[in-house]
Length: 135
Image (tube, rainbow, N blue to C red; front, side, top):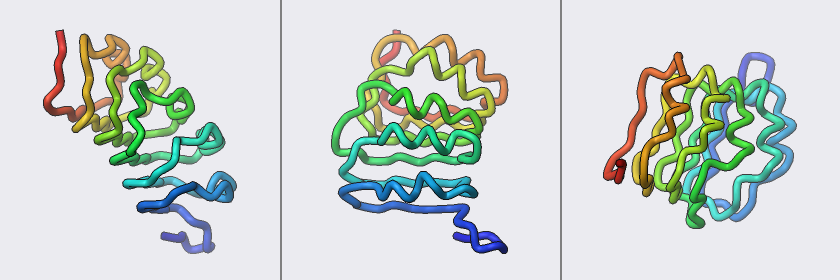
């Protein structure tokens, strides 16, 4: 989707083997979806920290275990959907996402206690998870 000036504000990547690095030069990108793609989340995603508001990463074939540090630098995120990514632990650094309103972790394998840092997310209205194993 593009805005009135022709800038890309929304981009969906589906079943790709790599992510074009030109994406990280999109100066107006607010929404990014990566679905069933076969690449790791590149560190360059942090270049979108001042503009990206909604990020969906779903069905990654290679389990992430923890939230990639680069995602925790995306300070303007209001929505983060990490469904079916093999995540087992939410880092305390989740507290960096102070504007986060919606956090979706459905289909992951979270074990133990959910990070107490989640409580620091004052803007958080919705957290979704299913079939988790918490203490």
